[in-house]
Image (cartoon, rainbow, N blue to C red; front, side):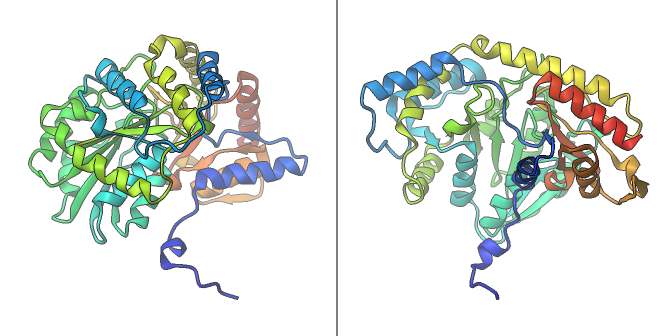
Amino acid sequence: MTHPLSDRISSLPVSQTLAMAAKARELKEQGIDIISLSLGEPDFNTPDFIKDAAIEAINQDYNSYTPVDGYAELKEAICTKFKRDNDLVYQPNQIVVSTGAKQSIANVAQVLLNPGDEVLLPAPYWVSYSAISILCEAKFIEIPSSIEDDFKITPAQLEAAITPKTKMVFFNSPNNPSGSIYSEQEYRALAAVLEKHPKIYILSDEIYEHINYGAKPFSFAAIENMFDRTITVNGLAKAFAMTGWRIGYLGAPQWIAKACTKMQGQVTSGTNCIAQRAAISAVLAPVEKVQYMVDEFKTRRDLVLDRLRQIDGFKLNIPEGAFYVFPDISAFFGKTVQGMKIENANDFSLFLLEKANVATVTGDAFGAPNCIRMSYAASVAQLKEAIQRIKEAVS
């Protein structure tokens, strides 16, 4: 029996990240010892100073609907953060607080894209970029990169991908899934291309900015001629271990921020009041307050890279940020391992789940069909065990 669902939802792919996480949970419920390296979620607790701010807000009886675009105090704090960390001068009327950075991105796409517009996605890209484009009835265009290029596109590639229908380009640095970081020089070279195309808008997703290992990220909007065309998206989920608190935000030209507020007002209205009050403390906190998490992620990254290098067939770059490794595993394509024929990254990811009991995510979901994504936001013991299982499974 078919159901009368809309074409919109029928054309929308399921998030491969969430699908693999659900599959891993299902196997765990069956008693199978699955190690999940699929979700991008820090395994730390939210810092106490943020929890204390939330408790204080509860005791102060914050319980009413919030302004659609966020509390004034939080928007002021976000302006302070943008100036402090990114050298970006936004006014509160250019800030919109949302239920996670994903909603911020969706709001921007909904208010800027029309059916038939083209969105450029430097690959690899976060899985929801393409899905959000589909929801807007826009066409997403992948700009491929390779591990040899540290998963970064060139100005020539960007220029070649632009057509009269191009409306937006999405940048994400530090990148999910590759961990790559565009330098200021690299971003300025890409901006030089976009300067010739003034009708193209840039969405800069900087959710992983504080999780970097020495190569400090650069904000695209800090390029003089790009500020009025760039929407800077960020949030608290990753660096502050606040995934479930659902706080994201954007800084944008006022007319875009106003449109995003209008859109959000008809979809979710304002973000959770307690989470917003706690977010003020998080946004204003010096980065040093979460440095212990970053230091631990770097230790885990180095451990994972060292051990994966010992497995034949895994080709690796050195991710400078986020908490993923994104190995090229195309050396396994066309081979039969433990009775399973591996034709692509989907097959390899399923092979690891079934034969090694390790959950990863296929690179197909990120526009990089030769790779798989592995999150090292897990304990050292789990990471060691997971990689040992992988090594035994493919040996």
